[in-house]
Image (cartoon, helix red, strand yellow):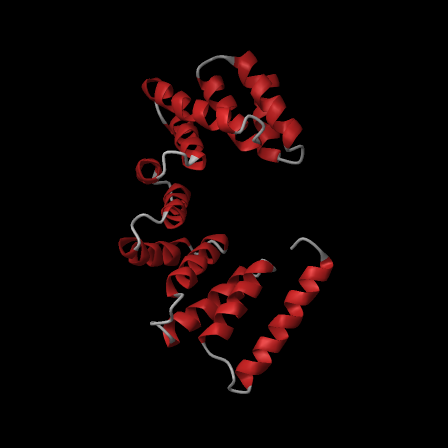
Length: 215
């Protein structure tokens, strides 16, 4: 939430919608809005609960695709990776060009240590959207961390595109630093980590990578 005022407004709206539902005046629109409200205050468990209720009660709801997409995101945020993947595999065939859903699937695959599957899904995203630099960064980082030296040129190509598009992005600079370190270029890796940390000073992951360079 951007401010306490905004959060207060969302909480008030949640109370109003719940009262409407309790009085029998709520339908799919209200359940959808309730899910969005909980999402906005980052209560992903409650958001997922009401979105699932909506999908169960009103499977023909006109916005069911967006409902299920948001539910997938909330499940991932809650660490419910198996349930999220089952839902993603149900939704993606109905919307095969939806790069948001595919990105969530790649995230689940990575978190469940299926690195090659995650890379393949990110490549599928790039096939749909060549300008998707988040997926290019993910491929580059995954190849740097889990690949062999033979994979490093491909990793560098993806990271070059990501960093050239957003040269100040800390995550992209961090990925570049990882790859440079794996290639033995410790000086350039250190500079990449320093720049990344200057853009995101509280990021402990980047700090650990920099400590590895110094140590």
